[in-house]
Length: 183
Image (cartoon, rainbow, N blue to C red; front, side):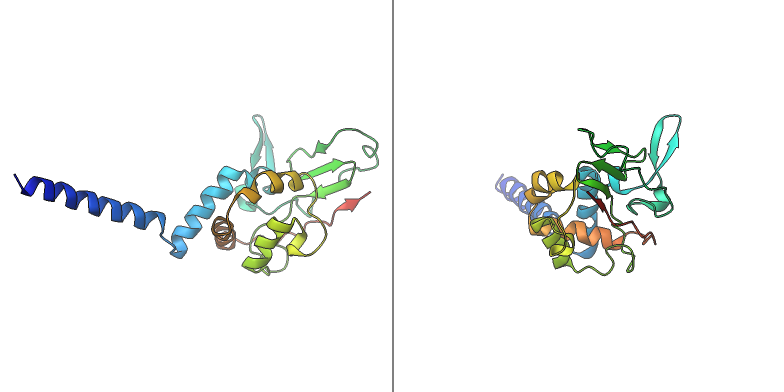
């Protein structure tokens, strides 16, 4: 009879250790997996991945995952909408026209020339925290500005580091997103 409580206690301790270890697993693969989940749940793919138009509507182009607005796309006509009280997205959701001008979803792949491949982890975190490009540049433009404030700033630095680790692990896509057209 005395062995049963000991066995139950031992099983409980082992279970607690394994559960705690999996939550605190800071291996590169665990960080990447946590970052992947945050990117997918956070909807980064919705605006930062170009789409192919199908009968069911826009479908993400997996070959250009998180590559942003395609450099080969025709630029949206800002002049036609500049006095509108609306914001308008392009069909693939990678550009938006509004009272500020036109903003384009950035290339979040680790391409060193056109994506975030040249960014440090600290630059990435500061971009989120300060809402400035590369942590010290121009302000992050709509529609991301409100999303940063409402969503990404709720994440702690470890979660942002996990997102950064995941973004650095995906396939780099060479795609030079245009600079915004500011009004």
